[in-house]
Image (cartoon, rainbow, N blue to C red; front, side):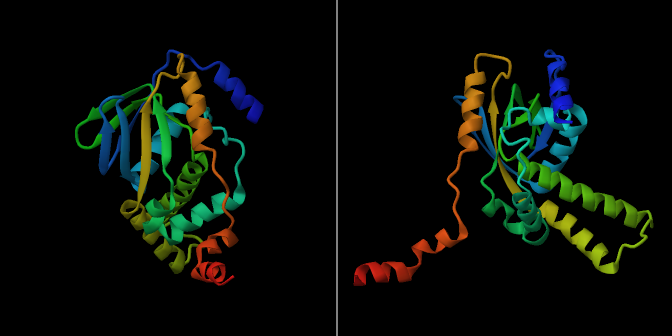
Length: 220
């Protein structure tokens, strides 16, 4: 499958243009380089992902992401748990997603129009968001069409709670205007490298700043 998807990339029409819209809540722009930082609800970001998958292919929207085929099931599981049980803190827990686009147009009604967007970091988060909410939207459709089957009362309550939290929760995005097929490909590689390079922190290391350690240092 991976080989077939890579072959699909090679035959993609380089002149083809796809435009995906992003609706946001809050934004900041750097006028000198037309860079956007924005906050969106998870609901609007989910809509962006869904539209992107429909228009661009999932494999294509991640083609500059170095972790596209290195999915960590534990990380995906933790992201999904946060989405379902601690969704209101998603913005606090998440470092944000970086997107590049060949052109960014600022439309009215808090909408950005992106030409040929690419997600170059946190594709695992994006996949988790899409997978979780696609599942719950399908459940909602089944419930409303009375195709309930083995759906329990608890699952119905959970479905509407998760989808309600979807609209209340937020995510941070950085959007950069870069011509993908240009001399700036080096810049794209560096952005991908640096935004995906992090020092792993184990849980036990979080205790290193506890007061007891400073007391012991002062005492000895």
